[in-house]
Length: 336
Ligand code: UDP
Image (tube, rainbow, N blue to C red; front, side, top):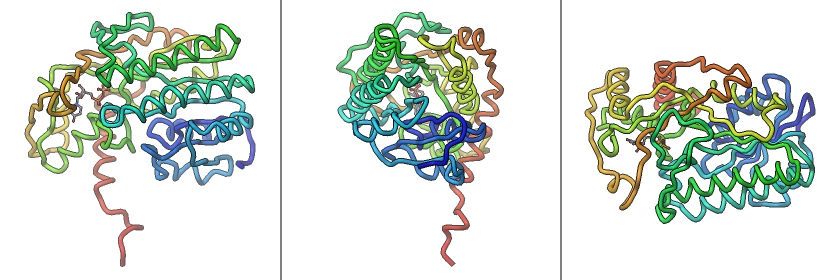
């Protein structure tokens, strides 16, 4: 086990893209961190920096493993539950496995938190808002529920169950819970493998391949820098007034996917062109997208004073630098 200093955090999904940034930030401020991850989408390379700390410990395991979760929750002071099947491509390709992780896994973690009375931050998603394309969306915005036989809306429903679970444990059992809805988040180390649009389009642009823009490209998103998202998470974890509440975390800088693709081509000085791909071809028959997704983050700002420090231009610059670095051969892996 890790040497103990500061508060002891358990981060489920700690080898994931956002989880690993949170792990690093917690270690940097002197906390002890245990990361639990099944490495389905998380990567050990995300934890290279953390692994150098004597206050960090990695456990390769699943949130579905009740004994492991019980022991780890018992040993920690605060739980951050980030383990989830995420990425539209992943949840569309593996619906049942995704649902099990996202519903049963969360239940195992919350039940353990309740057993030992540990504060728990539950990560949810902007997918919660479903087909509500009004914007900006405050936390009180209506969920416009899609047909649950469409896998995307099944994912949204599963994460809603997680939120309800956390809410019930707070209201009925007094468990200190915080729910955060993460909007699109980008940064170095984000894999293009699970559908996230920026790493995918950047990889295509750097290879001079066509940029695959789904639908007509007029759908919009706001992309937050992962370091801004982690700063918001830390502020909420530190603030007792956040307990029992739900917060949006995300950027408010809105861009259409077609414009995003053009910006990426220009910044990469790529010879790529844009290829519009019908949703059915991209994700299978009956897929439905969110046309617009913009968070209202006033609640987070009012409580914690949080402001994003990075612009979309910064986000793109980082994603491109990282993709170039990943594409280059690593000197330590080149055989002599
Ligand atoms: N998208 C796209 N091309 C891709 C991957 C995604 O046009 O290669 C679109 C996707 O249909 C959505 C937006 O980009 O409208 C953001 O997709 P992502 O999967 O990153 O996140 P989402 O907001 O859908 O969860």
